[in-house]
Structure formats: structure tokens, C-alpha cells
Length: 123
Figure 1: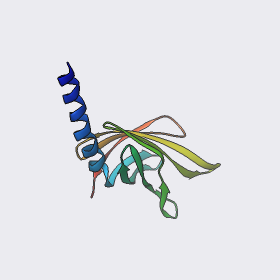
Figure 2 (figure 1 turned 60 degrees about the vertical axis):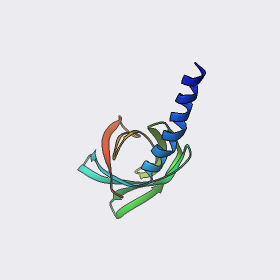
Figure 3 (figure 1 turned 135 degrees about the horizontal axis):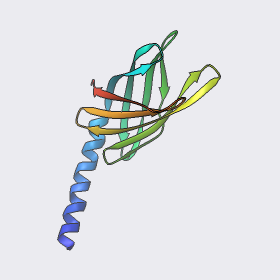
Figure 4 (figure 1 turned 120 degrees about the horizontal axis):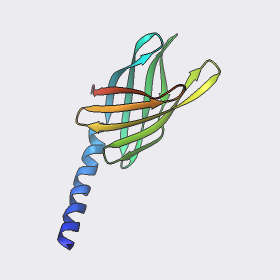
């Protein structure tokens, strides 16, 4: 039994840093908006179980970059928040995702219902 627990802990210790390292870089995708598909990109930096970086969306005046807040990595799951300018002021958007190789299946929750989209690793 001890050996099985040891092997499980060893596997976790080896794979957790690998997942964190795989997420570092730029990820791009498209999210359905009121005016059709909109490009969205994320720059992620993982340090242990902490996720930092930024979210870049297209605004009326061009690209808007917002920092990631409260970013977490738990196994293959990421979660974080970012703010975005809205008509009535700033809106907090909550993102969750599941990492699978060079793809992240994301869910965005903010104003309105949840929106699902996929990110592909760009760099």
C-alpha cells in the first residue's frame, strides 16, 4: 500500500510541473459575440499553481489587453478573472478551462450566459 501511495505521489510530482510549463505562452481562439466571431488571445505564465498573464480582445478602438487576476492551476484545470470595459462600467469576466495538449477548452462567464470556446497554442 505504501508503495502504491509513493508511486501516485511521484507521478503527481513529475506531471504537475509539466502541465504548468505547457501552458506558458500565447493561446488564441475565437469567441462568438453579438457582431459575429471575435478573436481573443491569452498570454499565460505559470508559477507553481499560480497563473498570471493577460487577455487581449478587440475593442472598438483596437486591441484591449487586460491582466489576469486570481489565476489558479489545479491539475489540468485553470481558472481566473479579468475585467473588461462595458457600457455601464467595468465587467468582471470569469474564465475556466481544461488543458489537453495544445488545446484548452474554455468557458467564459460574465454578462449573459456562459460561452464556450477553444484555444490553440500559438507560441
